Length: 328
Image (cartoon, rainbow, N blue to C red; front, top):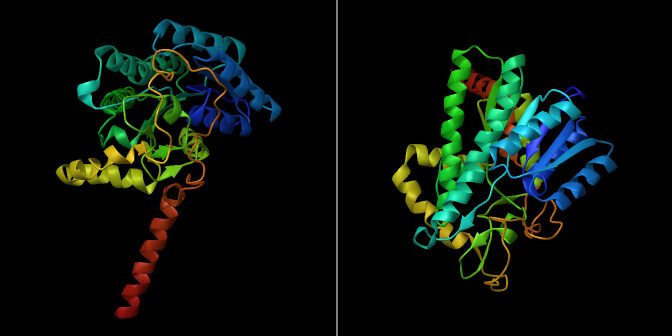
């Protein structure tokens, strides 16, 4: 990465988005952090500046297209031409479909799907003029394999994948040098599970195995510099995606176990009056990590393998050729 790159990260005040912004800054990029909560943005900005990086913060709601467009203009005015735009902002509600309210589904869609669309349009408007730039959509294994209790979120991630695939074909048709990629994540240890709206008898938790947000940040920054159509992170994500593509009915039955897997029975019963971040931010300076640090994995061997798949492929072919010679 050249040190003068300008990177925009949405949902950058906590969790994966914050970890990603920090990772880009450590690599020398000038980073614009977009999210709703100004206090958390200021905290993330201070962390980047303490590490010697440069960060611009803009408090906004990605569900508002005009705010996102204005933010893109401000970034280019203050930091320079945008090289990388990372769409990461999301909200969710964890509850069965029969308990959902229409306004809750609309809000998840407006932030998680339309927020991605708004960011993509703002980035594309500028990148197409220069015929360069990268848009990274932060997806999920749930963009392929839907699970119980998160229907609104799964639907939004499915929509992001469809939108991204369509745009990719248009860029190919136009012979554009602008690139778009999607990173499909497994579960991560973020504050999401402490502030997401839910109506469950136990506190929500990510479906195991769980990774540290820095693992996602490394995958996202790597995807922004490479040329992969998609990047799958973690063997659990690979199993969910490939299993759904090959045996969807069986995958449905296996996914049903995620009902219990999303409830933390070891935690105290949830407060029915607790604040959540669906429609407004939650007070507090939540950072990168959530409460599952003891079990969160710090690396993914699957991701390391996918980074070097050409070398591994050559090694496998070499071993196969050697074995063939031995047995001749």
